[in-house]
Length: 278
Image (cartoon, rainbow, N blue to C red; front, side):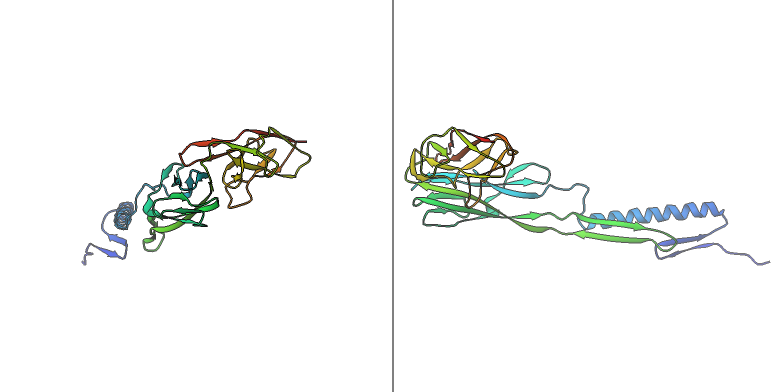
């Protein structure tokens, strides 16, 4: 009588076994081997290409601090760039990542690297910081597919990249250091105004800011303008020009204020104007 031998074969990533055991046992062994092979290949591939289970936060946006600056000629102001990360945290970015420039070096210069602004002559300039940040890769992801055919592994890897962020702030240079700021709705006036009224919405009203009670110290473009109630009125701020323009949105009241930082690092706040929209 003839006899049938036993043995095993391995084809591709799929194992076929023949033995005298029951079909259920062969199926369990085959599934176990397939799972072991898949896990082994997944881990070796995943770890080999630098993947990980944790994702480091990346820079989402960058800004300059302080947001505005006013200084006397010959004085300096130190600026710095901060990054807002994908996890919501904020951190100062290294100077080796940032280059600085001034829109008019006859008014103010800025060191690069460094971010130290020096007032040269009266006027307003835009200081720009260009920051290059590295965005880490997310590593590799491996998809394991097994149907009636061979085991299939699909690998996708994302490498690190760089992204550039540009931030700007206005800087005003005055004859003397700013220690007092006054705002009003009349150009050239240094009178401390407390109220303003606008009829209807939408409508526009220009606000002005002056330092030390001197109309020649025009801070309109170099202060940070704030509206306490943007649903009633908004106000432009932080632009290269066109700041201090209030736009009414609805009836009500909003407090309009302005602030800047002088060369001593002190925050100078204006008085408050209560804007009423009828």
